[in-house]
Length: 140
Image (cartoon, rainbow, N blue to C red; front, side, top):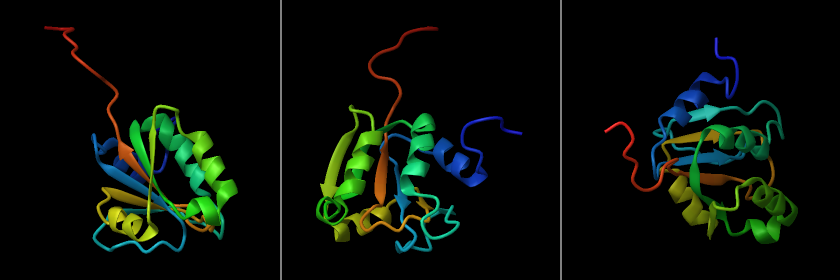
């Protein structure tokens, strides 16, 4: 039995399968998800779990280099937008794109995590990073 970290089998598998540049989307409860994209449905009830509640433990296990957010969030859900920004490390690039383009990018995901979130334009796309940089010669 796994003792710590993310316990959900499908989500743990999805995180372990992520590579550099792979896309993992964390979406709200009403977001359209293509049937040909692997989906981990964590939605329980309206509003639970929230996207932020999923992202925080994800960041403990997944290296990301970029976050994509629908640009509409700035006007429609500004408080939520600020909360989202506060949870990402400072070295992670934040990119805003129109919601229609955002939906297209989600279709390119290695996987999608559906939450119970019900905040407008709250979905995010995480782009996998790497945990190493530059040359490493140990063990040669």
